[in-house]
Length: 302
Image (cartoon, rainbow, N blue to C red; front, top):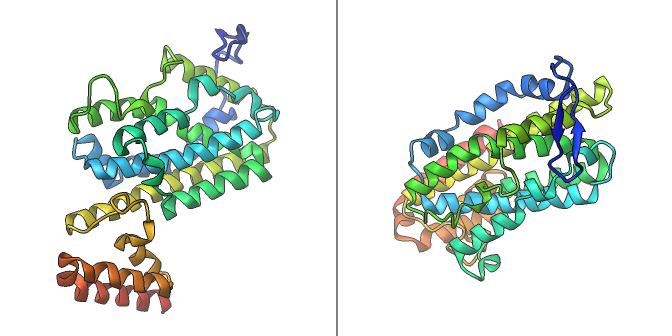
């Protein structure tokens, strides 16, 4: 049994077994999310990011989505910090990201950033699921915390360096505080501690299966948010305005309007037409866009 200094001030504690079993929660989560994890790492967004092809506007929108995601998750973590299935994983000083993201958004959008941003539809679905879990089935918060925080401590550190170089951000870290964990001296050791805490949770086999399924959902939510960012890139390439450049009113964004129109929202179809026709590039693209939406709607209704 390994002895490790506790990261939340509890002093040295025994952190489980020296060897891992395939039935340990950390191993089940790693195996159960392997396929979706690889799929997430191979999205076009991540490929472009790692190559340094980063558009600052998209990066800012990503930070907005993360802000809403972590706000929801950390609200539910606080609500359930004494729950027996989450209390061993409660590390607010070491892990919580909401305040760091708020500082990043202030750097990018200015002191009135809160009036400049809003939650995207994809991020809102993620947020809604986190609140549902926290209020109705708190054990599943473990899956969301594992998926986000462990990822931030792993690949997130690589992304920080790439983003800083590609966007020529200050070497002092402004705009990238999300990636900075001041309370953690060794990411590797902390991840080992966190996994060992997960492995000593008293859970039956059915609950472990549900945790794996929820972790897969968490990856899928993250991919949906990234996929929406890919759609935003298409809007930028067309020279059209995006959410964030419109006073935070997401309904004015033609990309969101197109998505909603395709799903049957007549109000959003009108918003799409108005937004496109007001913009010079949109006037050229209008006929093609309308045809594409009509084709999609026809296929959907078949």
